Structures are given as structure tokens and as C-alpha cells.
Image (cartoon, rainbow, N blue to C red):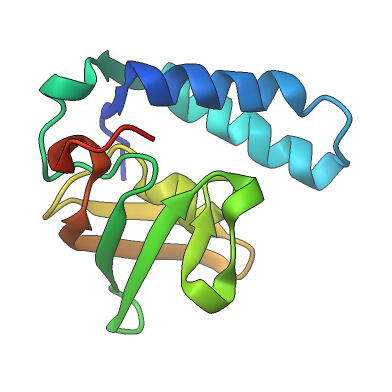
Length: 137
């Protein structure tokens, strides 16, 4: 499945690029995820926060998606690594699922490699998006 261009806000782009720059002292596995994130950012269209569609997953969004392989419904907040907390369903942008969701919108089907193999996800709903809510984080 060919990946389509994703949307990302200028603020998220800057913060994620800073995250990548700051990750030079990480282990090989962590650097792999940073490299993958950099590739995703290179395939993105940067838009102003006020212009991002409200159905697109941005950083700090709460998203409901379906795992098409298991039919499981998942709800996660997409956060920066320092805020990740699986007990609170806060998933890091550096987690494979987190990277898969960023920049895609409701109805999109995403095929993405995870440690257990390829998975397919369908975004069902963006329950909260900071830009749509007018929240500045």
C-alpha cells in the first residue's frame, strides 16, 4: 500500500524536528524510530494550525481507530515521548502505532510495520484535536 502525503502543523513539525535532532545519543532501536519519523515528516505537507482539517490526527490528539486485522477498537492520545503512559492510553509518537496515525484523517486506512509484523488500521474518529479545540499546547 502506497503511503499518501500526510498533514502536519508547522508547530508540530518544528517540535518533531527538534526531537529528532536531540535524539543523537539514543540506542540503535530508538534511532531507527527517529529515522522513520524523519522519513514521515519528509513526506508531509506543512499547514498552519488554523488550517489543519479537524479530522486529521495531530500531536496531542485523541484518536479512535480500528485494528483491521483483529477488529479491535483502540483509543489513544498521541503524545511526545516524555508524556507517554500506556496506563493512560498515551502513546508516544516514536511508537510504531503513533507514527502510523500522525497526519492521517478519519476514514484513512494505514498499513504499518510493527514489531510483530504488518498491521492495518482504520481511523474511525478524532475525538479531540488541540487545533480544532483552540488549545495552545
